[in-house]
Image 1 (tube, rainbow, N blue to C red):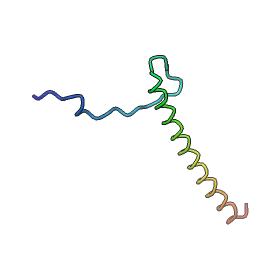
Image 2 (cartoon, rainbow, N blue to C red):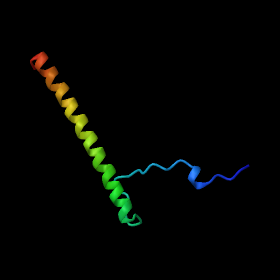
Image 3 (cartoon, one colour):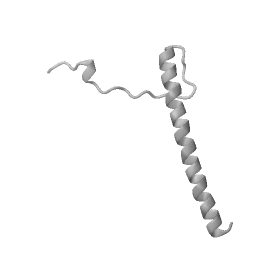
Image 4 (cartoon, helix red, strand yellow):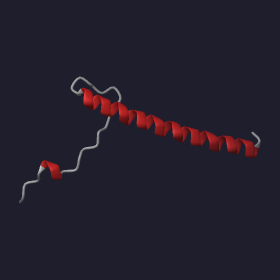
Length: 64
């Protein structure tokens, strides 16, 4: 059975867990996680805005 090179293995997706111990992470890893979390915040805010717009349209339609 041939050995699997590390380069052939799929890259593990970086996951950040709230409250996770950060002492073993490098500055680069922390910077990458901050970027991931900022992207996720932007995605959440966009989804909230979309839902609020839908709710406002429904409220106007039903004259709530």
